[in-house]
Image 1 (tube, rainbow over the protein chains, first blue to last red):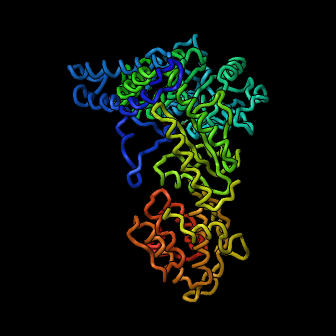
Image 2 (cartoon, chains in turn purple, cyan):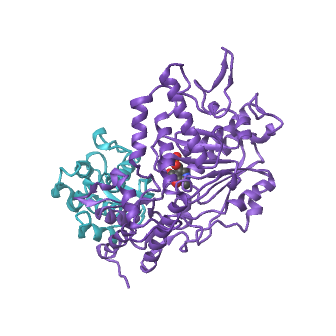
Image 3 (cartoon, each protein chain N blue to C red):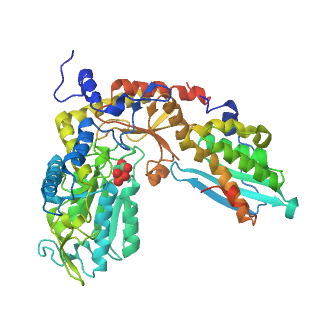
Length: 443
Length: 155
Ligand SMILES: Cc1ncc(COP(=O)(O)O)c(C=O)c1O
């Protein structure tokens, strides 16, 4: 048996052990065929330890965190807050800088609404904000100001900014995508200027797989005094992410894409910014004092967590972080990199397939989208599905990007730690049925 | 694969009466937001009252083989037919497509439409097959034809 390379992909023995942790991977689909799950970019599967952690919460700890002083409530609060610590340390952050949300979409909206609420408050920062540290005008946005995104954004990191601009009169601008599927930085200095207040972009594209040059973008944003918001939905699950190293101001991700439960995500933000930001959702649990006329708010992160939280899900997500730490994020990344190379190499030998996104594997993650010219992605996906291979078809919530690459829809395979080289081969074998079924002439 | 019968592949490769034509009474544009399939469809109705018939259906359809084939079958089965027959065809198509595979379709009523019966077993694809028909009924309504609620379908 080959021994494990401490920095390489998982061996087949390791993979067998990993796969045994995921109950769903042993089920069959479409008349008894093994499930080949290549849709982790949409949502990942969950290991037993995550399911057990959620169950454990309801069996032993269930009580409303931060409400009440009975034994369960105390233990529940402690478990909830310790989940926050685990998740924070997973991304190199401090616990009070991590705000739980229901997913990345809500996390991004939280930041976008801070800006428009600052305008509505008529002057920026929250009354008790730590003024002097953050300029109270930081979150005020209006005509003449600009928000910059990229053409490869998921709708979750596009529409909140479109709406923010509509509400405030600011202008939305964007960085374009090159034909190779990389960000076009040749006009970076023209697009990101002194007028730019926010630069929001994906760490890794959920369609192209491209890993964007965070350092370059952050450097330019800092030069012009713009805040940076990183959509890390497709990076936190797949590579070691450290918020301090990245240097961004905000970072958003979803638990369900990183082996955790649905219904939990997080916003990380620099503490002084979170302090200065106006509140978003309001109600119970986020207050300090309340009178009939008004309220003052709890310190971060509580001030952004109105209502009884998704505690079981937060604890499930902490279990997912523990699981990923157990595997080692460097090995997860190396493993997915090897799978991506295998798939790209396989697709390259099929001239009837066009990969949408970088065809070399540098600065590239394991989301591989492609088109079969003359066959719609829905039909490709159906043929794969008939062989038990689950991929995503459509525009993957990135419609403008699909327009740009002139594809109505693409077929996307995406990986997680539990995928095997044999599953890549199964995808390629199933794909080879497409030309024959649809009568394509292939060389 | 049972889904891709030769008839469907033929319709999707050579859609019947494709293209947009004049004259028309109403033009609609429908999309399937989950996958981006699109159709622009025009209807031209002639005659009055009980004598009305579907003079022309012209369309520009961009989508998967199921959605293009379904538009082609719509054009083939419904063009030139009296309005009430056209609505019966729609009702029969919809019943088959939403039956989860129970209703094999009545060839007398829907002709080549029976080739789409396999779609009913794949809930994610039913929308593809319904797209052109929903556009058709919407266009009829926009040209002033009221369609009984039970035949309107859901959008
Ligand atoms: C890059 C990217 N951003 C944002 C999202 C939104 O995530 P969610 O739907 O979990 O909020 C996704 C996933 O759907 C994604 O892939």
